[in-house]
Length: 73
Image (cartoon, rainbow, N blue to C red; front, side, top):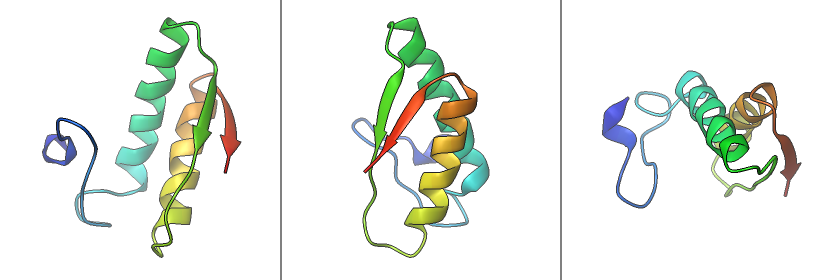
């Protein structure tokens, strides 16, 4: 999973390197960091790819289970 992280973003091919499982874990990690910084509101957006709704839902689940509120735009 480490090969999906870049200096300024996260990139991968769905579903081989970027899938629901690792996006969920990214959401959990992001929630943990946000709460550490006294932030609990996260905004999630996406592009028009077919995989976007699936990955956005996985990210939102990780964020919410990590203790954050999610605004889906």
